[in-house]
Length: 153
Image (cartoon, rainbow, N blue to C red; front, side):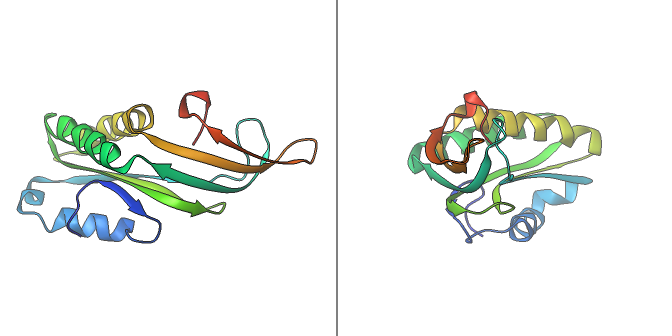
């Protein structure tokens, strides 16, 4: 895998491939822990509507830039060896992976706070857009764009 962070079409990256690319770097020898976050499509949204599918789009050039900056910022933290954020775009069914965030560090105590910050930052900073296809509580089919700030992913 040549790209360490960014937006990828669904099916083009995997958690195993990301971890392998991380382990293949010479700097990985300093790592004693790897933590990961996998964002997946859940069955019900925050309004308890039944999710049929999600469609994710991104302003790719800007998203790649933002994700790279987040990773670079977080790699400067003491004990952090590598940070990678890979967000997928396309159509997704319930249970499918949407995003992989992986942090390698010297010790387990180093990686968990950075992992959490990486997740919170990409959700706020990256121009990634989510359209939900749902069945409302009244049984109607509805489609709408969701803002992360309104309680998305």
